[in-house]
Amino acid sequence: MPRCLGGLGYHTAFNLPLGANSSSASCTFAAPVGRRWQLDARFLPTGEMVEDARGVQLRQGMPLDGVALDDVFEAAGEGANEAVLTDPEARIRVRYRAERAFGAWVLHNGDGRRRFVCPEPYTCVTNAFNLALPPDATGMRVLAPYASASLACSIAVEPCEAEQS
Image 1 (cartoon, rainbow, N blue to C red):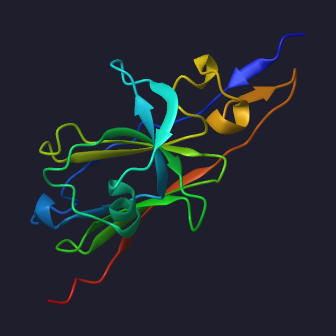
Image 2 (tube, rainbow, N blue to C red):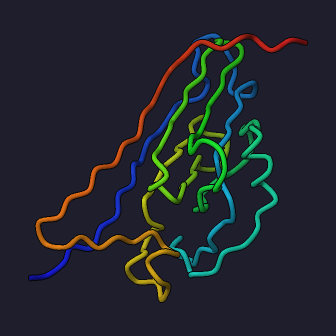
């Protein structure tokens, strides 16, 4: 009986700012990213990974105004596997948590000026089935006949304190 190759990813988008009377320039975004996958002209991973200077900034939280993202990152191995979007002027925080099985994050926000961000948790890197890498490197899973898998992500919207000046 044939096996099922599998991967799961969510294409989730959040408009910036989160509040009607706040500015996108005051919003910050943090993501649990490690190395970045090199992409080809079609934005598919080549199989090579590189350190990205933005990784530290993304893990700590950074403004996205004017910063273009269209990248695939491995999930950082430490701490919560969650992306956090904070709008201090609106006093709103969004936490997007994914199980550790989601080993990659695709981060996209167009040209950085269109006032949105897409934090996308993936269980495997895009195009994992066509990369000449082992499944543990790409996150690709193989399910035996009649097998199943359960995965969970959550999105929480919560109040946050205004930043002190």
